[in-house]
Length: 267
Image 1 (cartoon, rainbow, N blue to C red):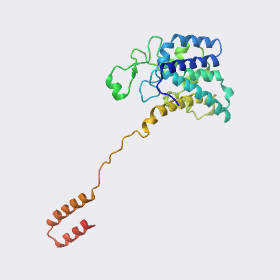
Image 2: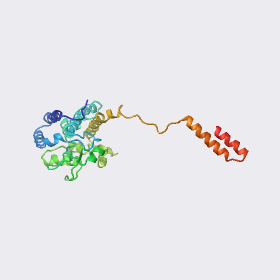
Image 3: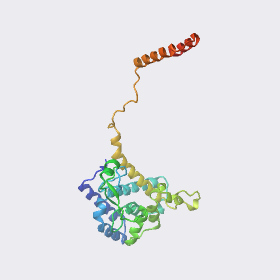
Image 4: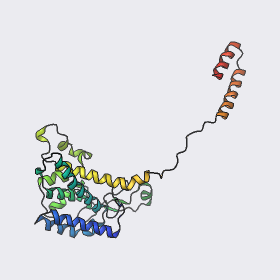
């Protein structure tokens, strides 16, 4: 069972697991570079939400690392599934898989000076729109993948072409700019590695798990009984029909027409 609200102990435990992934899967000297980077921004990244609205996944303190750890675990599991069903997993390494999953949303941290998400101060937006956070206006716009790749580069952390593509394309066709990579009909222009698809699928899977544990319980058995739009009172309907009949027939002088209308009301 996934707990969608983290305690201080869970936030620390999630961070320890995150660092363990670096130690277990990333090789030197890049390992040391990553550890240095994440140590520098530890306080911010540990407490980051994964989104700014409650309707999105993991929009709570510590939600970012919780999400990223889940994406890494899903990616490792999906690697085995894809391999079992015949995908050529020699086109990427496990280090590339974990590095890509670990840093796919890194751009959500903001830049060196500014966080992406800051506490929402507008009470109406908090209450009515579910926005516990808001975007930081001081932060220059960049897409999440582009900012993440820039952060890695600017801190001397190198990445392979596979990792570049997996991070850049992790939103799949939810991002219009990815179409040229993912909607090609020519074999020679399709991606040469399935790592791209595994990372995207792992991100979708993690977000879906987080949605189900956050929202599905609220849809089961807790909804108010729906009132009917109207109630049919047969006695009242019959009385009204008789009144309309009497009024209508009283204004008709032709006996033939009166008989026709009488038959109409009696049907």
